[in-house]
Image 1 (cartoon, rainbow, N blue to C red):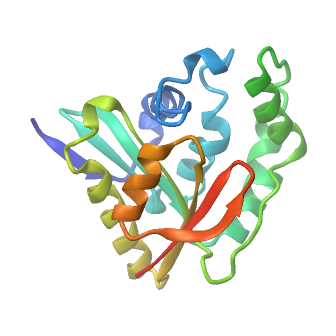
Image 2 (spheres, rainbow, N blue to C red):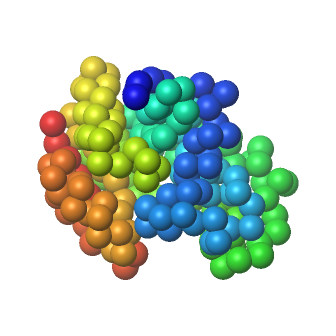
Image 3 (spheres, one colour):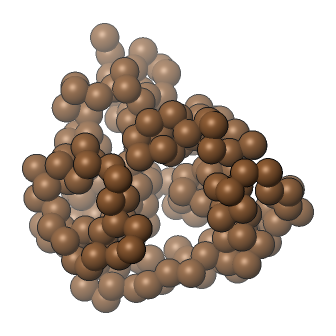
Length: 194
């Protein structure tokens, strides 16, 4: 088994969007939640890779994508790109909502993503790993790679959001040294200094 961690390329996007979908139900397969397989990735994956692939990493097992971590150095700059450059380009493609989850994501695509900035935690991340990649220490490797990259670029902290229903991820983040920054109706914003 050969596992590599590298920056994603545009050629990885299809596989990465599949991972985003297959982990979108609190780490489980969320295919039943969306009518378009690419929809959820248009918020939580693709814009990060297109905006700055140097702040994104993909884990490959025998050249197949099995997980990723994407994020940004400065959330303010990323959300300006997302709302002002990326979303306007895809608005005409994603207009018809069939499921409730479609409606939520399409609303973000059509109206922009609302966001909060945490000045002491400007960087943020999203991480998803397929079941076949779990239990191999891959989550730790991806987070360690990501935080080292942030440090190398002059950042010393990061935040992320986790659903209150995703107990497994909450436990993992705690083991990785994350703590609660703020509690939200949907879950928690977690923080880590390094």
